[in-house]
Amino acid sequence: MNRCYFIDHKGTRIYYIDFTNLRTEKEIEEVMIESKTLIRSSSKKSMVNLANIDGMHFNNTIKELFTEYVKGNADYVQKSAIVGVTGLKRIVFNGIMKLTGRDVNCLNSVEEAKNWLTEPSRK
Image (cartoon, rainbow, N blue to C red; front, side, top):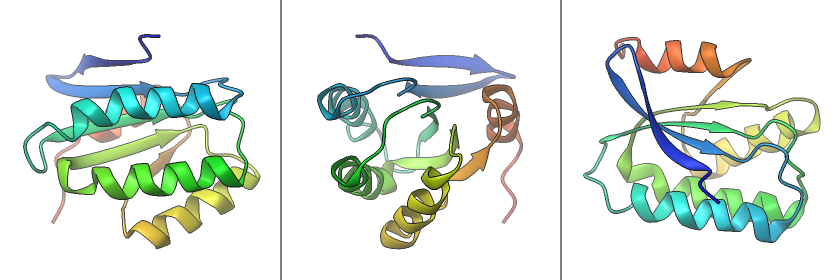
């Protein structure tokens, strides 16, 4: 499937997770399994991630899958951004952030997300 890979942007190694236009729970879960295997085998707080869910199907089962996925990755992620959160997905996304306690920045484009991810973190 190869929907998860590293990209370099301004000297930062970003793990890109591509959920774009996926329609079935099985397809989405396959990408989650592929990405979380690498993420959860990394050092604590070492990953810089960019997920793209543009055009992805969403339902209650997928919401539950994402809640577990996001929560389980928390210890390994230093900084995270997401693209493609529009309409009703925004409401679901906000709920997932509250349930998981994660802070994933929602941005409008992949380029905008890559630029944000490479900015120095502010404490």
